[in-house]
Amino acid sequence: MNFIKIKANAKVNLSLDITGKREDGYHELDSVMMSVGVYDTLTLKKTDTLGIELACTSDGIPLDRTNIIYKCAEALFEKYGLTEKAGVFIIVDKNIPTQAGMGGGSADGAAALVALNRLFELNADEKRLTEIGASIGADIPFCIRGGCCRCQGIGEVLTDIKLKSEIPLVIIKPDAAVSTPQAYKDYDGLISPAHCDTEILINALESGDIKNIGGHLFNSFEDVVKESSINDARILLKQKGALSALMTGSGSAVFGIFESMKKAELAHRYLQGFGYSKGFVCTNESHGVEIIAKG
Image (cartoon, helix red, strand yellow):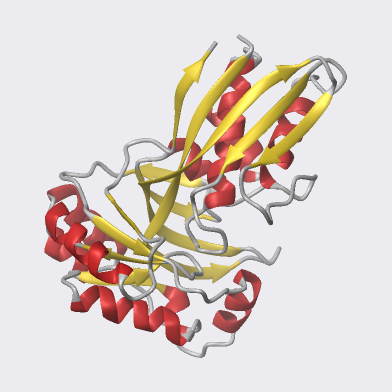
């Protein structure tokens, strides 16, 4: 095999509950994450030149060692002794918005690990890839697994959730940029932060009760991220029929859950008139990554 092409699906947080802070500074989470049909595409090709080279179809994406894809590839090369033996050229076709809370970087890193494992026939299982990914980013383990999971610890403890039915979504990205470290810092300053009952949400997901799912979305960061454009996005989604709307991750993307794809598509068309021309209408996906070509 000389090349491989792979989809990297974005994620949304149906719930994100910060449950504590560890001595090492990391926060303990109890979150329900779900893969969605918004994705980047990575094409990886073996090269005769040693090392890792990145290219991207979008401007503004770092192509050096600060890129999560590069970090994941470098870690895998080191783990399996490929640094002085192999070379790879990775082309990234970006579609997932950046600084959105949709896990775009983590999804790309997860896809790179899975694709490199196949391309170089390393035969690493999911557990091994997850261990490598977790050392680089908290969302990478979920992005490798995909589907819908309860994610605990710092994101590395995954419990699969079997969805009863399709969940139609509209996702829009306000212009606001949110600093994740600052959001955590502001959260730590809260005296009595709110929490959610994750079990109720999981029961609704497993029973396919779309209205109950919408009624139990939760994000701890909504207590500290006060960007008006994010709140405006939530209001617009609800006005156009969303059962509920929530910011994902630390923002700034906002998603709304709808009773049907028809209602979601109508809302999406309406929102394009409010400047959300790059919004998405999609559903949940069963995988975090998917190989679509190889040869």
